[in-house]
Image 1 (cartoon, helix red, strand yellow):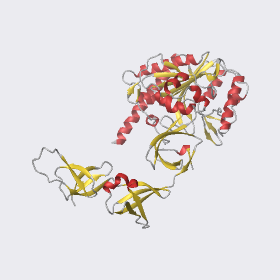
Image 2 (image 1 turned 45 degrees about the horizontal axis):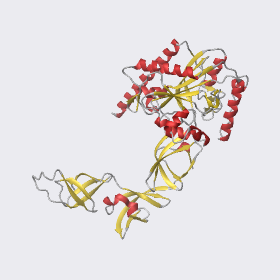
Image 3 (image 1 turned 90 degrees about the vertical axis):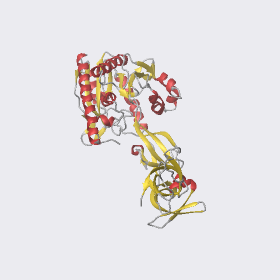
Image 4 (image 1 turned 120 degrees about the horizontal axis):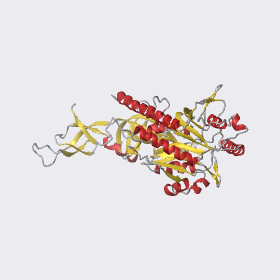
Amino acid sequence: MLAREERHAVAGSLEIRAALLDAVRRFFRSAGYLEVDTPALSRHALPEVNIEPIVCPDFGVLLPSPELFMKQLLAKGYEKIFQICKCFRAGEIGTRHRQEFTMLEWYRKQANYWNLMEECEALIAFIANSFAPKIKPTRKGKTVAIIPPFARMEMKEAFASFAPYSLSQALNSSCFDEIFATTVEPRLPREEALFLWGYPAEGFAKTQSDAPAFAERFELYIGGLEIANGCSEIETEQENTSAIKRSLAQRATSGKKLNSLPPFYASNYQLPPSAGCALGIDRLVMLFAGEEDIGSVLAFDEFAR
Amino acid sequence: MYSASDLRKGLRFKLDGEPHLVVDFDFVKPGKGQALYKCRLKNLITGSQFERSFRSVDNFEEADIQEKEMQYLYFEGDKYCFMDNETFEQLYLNADQVGEAKNFLLENLVVEVMLFEGRSLGITLPNSVDVIVTEALPWIKGDTVSGNNKPVKIETGYQLQVPVFVEQGEKIRVDTRTGEYVTRVKD
């Protein structure tokens, strides 16, 4: 009996996934994007502060994101590209995480993070429309309203509204992640979509020109579930070098391995003004399938904790 | 030694010198932030529950916890005496350590005792026990005023509500987790 119910649940989410991927492709094709397919197995990974690739000794690394190669396509002159691919992150297993997951990533030349917020919003509305009225995005049994434009909230304001400390107090005490995860994120609106922006500078996002301690980066939350992350890309070799230095220094202080740099990042880095966004397909399937655990929307799930 | 990646529901470890149980667990990693291991912990000595997040660099000491089957022998003075049927070792627990379980502690009942560094953290009873009703008002047929239940006392002195047809001297099954009547038992 239970086996039958389980089979039913899986079939439901598999169908939602297929329809969702189809809608994503239709959206990007009609917006003039080229679908690309870059390697998942690479010799190098970007030295991210908090993301570990899955290392395959003697073969290379399974990449945590297609960023590394997609940016090289941007540098080669491709202006609008998207990709749907498997990504790998060592040790990430939770109700919203798996070590292997499906990501949608897209890059656009002559765009900044505000432009990508708009595109992200249009994509989500397009997908929601393609499912309406039968299937609605649902979180914890409640329908989430997808009505563009989504609210845009600065991180400073999110801390002021939801946390017992201000953003600067959190940053000064090096407890940004803890306070965000335990007090801000759980209080984000459950029945609507929201962009959070004004994140502290980190990784490979461009920094704000008038506030270099902050990044030109956003996260999309739908019904309190983190769905996508976008940013304006670093353009010059100088910015890239300092981002890599900062990242390597942070990795060194937490005792993480310092991998060798991919050649494109090691020298002559140059990108046109552009922005990119990464979106978790499995999370979006969770939303439209009304599931609270990522394992429930996977065809097979061997690595649940 | 455990590391943060060992954390999961049901894991027990030592925190600030006391044994704790992970009641609920999730791996979270908002944005591009660091991984956090969000736990709901239960202090196994005080029973209190609280939330705590750990970072991936955190380590935890293993808790020396043993679970032993022991037989309840007798109550003497203010102590409950239990015996390990393999080693014949005897363990004396006070009323606080036995807690609510005292309501269903019958002589010779086999229970599970949880020990932390040799100290008892409490006992777990079987889910149900069969006990004799020692005091009950007789059932007067046709009495509809008193409703469908009546209070009775069982051999341990514990009082509970049972259906009106249960008579003094009969054996009944009681759910030890809820303290409620389950059924009449015929030997």
